[in-house]
Image (tube, rainbow, N blue to C red):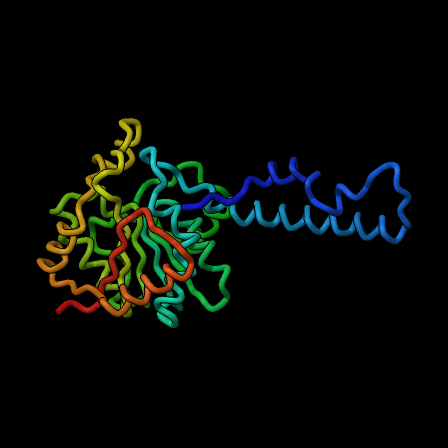
Length: 260
């Protein structure tokens, strides 16, 4: 996933901006021109400040195991998922670490309602996250157990950096449960087997090392649990991703909500 340019670095490189470098001491400028330059500079600084604030939620997405997490891909993935699912993105549940940041990102679209489940303890939660938890928009819940929602409570459920830490015993419960609370689709993001495993220091948080499974393993698992791949959504996603030249670094599975 491509990183956003660092705002402080942009400011340090501001000398390369044409209207800034135009302020050469040997050239006399009119007050109107100087005023325009000052206003333009302030607008750029304001934009950079706003952008850095907006990206701070996603910058908080941790590198749990020394790699870029699947959750960190969501800022790029969400616009592609909107192209894929259309109106099905109207009511979204995100399940995974840093769910507060993902929910905040989703809520930037006024047409989207978003909720989140944080499956691990919230460490050093900021005031914005605490507010989401207080309002019940984000919940801290163990996904190994039944979710506190009615069937088809959400149009789409997105899961990232959560299923890799579950044993098959709990996957047999959790994945069908996630499908139960969705009406139009379930999107599962999982790491590749080649990705590094969890650091020892993180084990108390996750309970077990991450186990990254192959796509063939997942497909067999979905069949065994009576979950069907959403081939239409998969094709739309691949087409939308190709238009943006996006290459995902996690496995992404599009599943139908209903069990057959």
